[in-house]
Image (cartoon, rainbow, N blue to C red; front, side):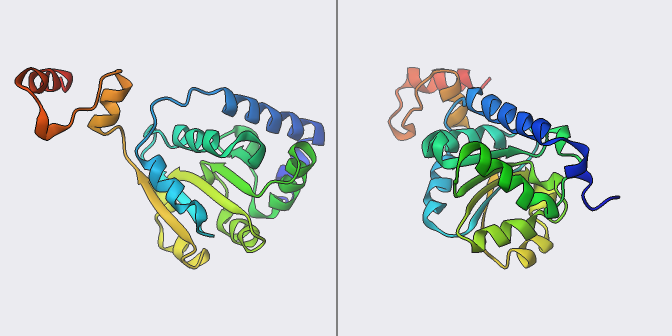
Length: 199
């Protein structure tokens, strides 16, 4: 495969269109019920480490990333979704070219939100290089790819791992629009309603 396969496959105009489409889609998506792990992620904001969010497919990693983005603000972050088939063939050696396009389009920003990064071979290399220049990364991906021994070696421990699971019962109740009860102080009727909600 040609070393510049990804860059040669698309024109600059096509790449710009793709990045703009991704931004519009991301900022228009429904951010749903606030996940409990959002508070954990925000606690890691002051650390210079990358925040790695892993979990099962459809557990809500991308939605959690969108919730974080809305807290940080649209003018502060770059969002890239590597699940997009137009990123097929993208490699670590293409990161500087991508960054150049992002700066050209959206101005200089220091926070990167990378969705489904496991689709990029050796992504840890460019993440580490950009972190050394002061960038902050919030990254999602599958468990198998992001919890490997190689990750710890390549990022030399400079990451905070966060595993996301499907809804907790409290999140499920909030999704249904119901109050999350204080368990020790439930009345008999409240306890029965809570048990009914679990079916």
